Image 1 (cartoon, rainbow, N blue to C red):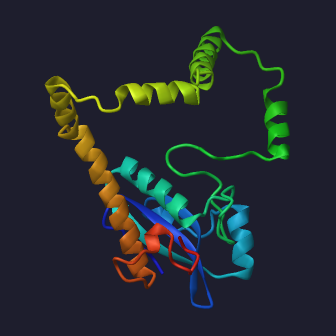
Image 2: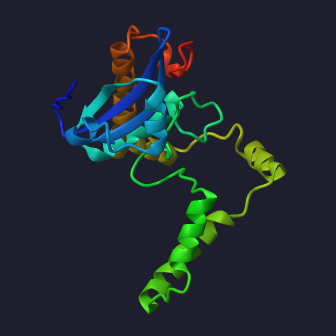
Length: 221
């Protein structure tokens, strides 16, 4: 079966049908060439394909690549296809959390050894060292940010409890709520829910079911 996309990017799901159960295993994002490619896949994906028949469905299409990344991340989380998720499905083979980058990827010991051997003995340029220093400084600040104790948090809550907002605060909150950034954020979340419901419908579930909330016994959410 060849997929013909109506938009530039799509998010698709590979799943296994087993005894009338639809069990998700992989969520991917790409263009038409990628969604129609069943050969350039990970060894994990190919190993499952030796014993089971992968089926694929396109759940979301868009011309905005960032939007596709966001939907991909949500589907990987909701369908539990990340291999390091404790509640992953039995065919899970997403090695990252999705999106632009390698978030969640955990290299094996062999990979770490290869990376170490490859980098050993390398001499960085002055510009490279400056960039490394900046990055370490930023990560250091985030990592070592002082955490507030429960007592401090409770004192702050007691102090704020019962306080009335000033007219200036109310005006500022209204401006934030009506800003384009807030509207765009809510629009993206609604599109994600619609994508999940369209995917559920294609897999045989009726729209409006609690499938995308994790209450379906077929192990797809």
